[in-house]
Length: 208
Image 1 (tube, rainbow, N blue to C red):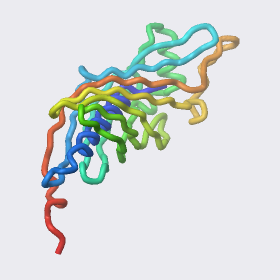
Image 2 (image 1 turned 30 degrees about the vertical axis):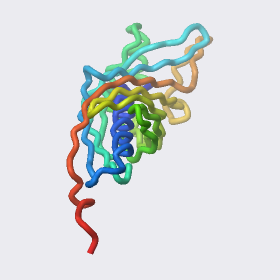
Image 3 (image 1 turned 90 degrees about the horizontal axis):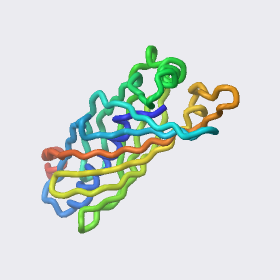
Image 4 (image 1 turned 180 degrees about the vertical axis):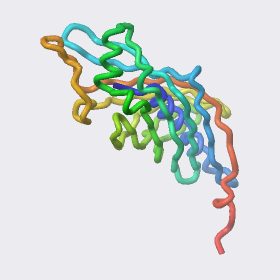
């Protein structure tokens, strides 16, 4: 129901552009590049139910994010393994993988960042909204991730939150008889990373 790298990316991209925005006095425009590290990314999902709330996580396969500090434009791709969802219950996880996400047909959950808007304060803390496209169960959906964190030097830590209305998006409702579950799943992400900067040559060329 959710994606692991999915939010990793969310959070990372956010922090990435936040840094950019805080460098408005830079002489040249730069592009920040962040390669997501699965070992430093935690993507958890939470699904409410009539009996109890289910908690679990997904695993990131790969991810790279690029952000232009001058425009806030973001690009890249963060890919989560749709079959990796784990909640601690074998039967429930199999149903989520095979019946709800249908991972055999759609094995990847992909988030593609498009733009980020936010503010970086003097202490290096930031809050931002990351806009992008989430491909889930073969369909594309515009999403906005609320993110916050801190940037010190080129190192950042960030968290993010997103609610996915999976039933409205066409995925199967896993409710069984009287055991009903929520129609939205909450995604929470925590991540850390290092930003590598490159000169945006197009921006540094003076207009004719």
